[in-house]
Length: 149
Image 1 (cartoon, one colour):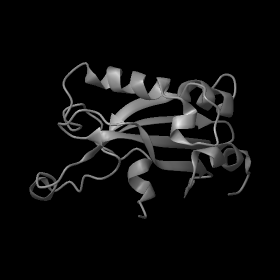
Image 2 (cartoon, one colour):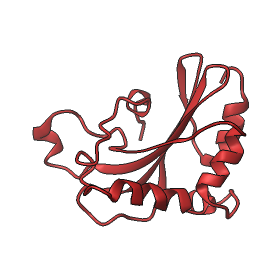
Image 3 (tube, one colour):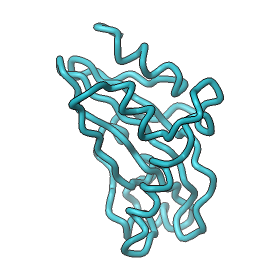
Image 4 (tube, one colour):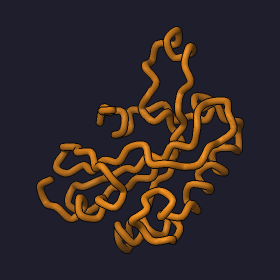
């Protein structure tokens, strides 16, 4: 399934109400994803917390942003969106030196339902205002190291 890069670049509905969550759930869901073993998201990764793995990948001095969003799946048409289950993602991302940025969306279920086991939904790297998808979490370090992906 090809996903548009535009929603992944921040043009998402990110309020907890849009994600079908109660107030306070947002931080709890982000904490769950941060603490998920990286190995559970990609079998080639070490069994360290996902947040720690990401910080090791991006290096010192980079601050990660965490948010809840709709995984880029809402159409903006309430009539259409109300007839289907909208996925909920925790997205981690950061702006990096040399005009680079990245985001990793981790699906944690669908609106108005109990959270499910976290799994990678979408990964992107942006360089020089151009975004590129990354297939697997294990490929993120190499994608960030490239000067022109």
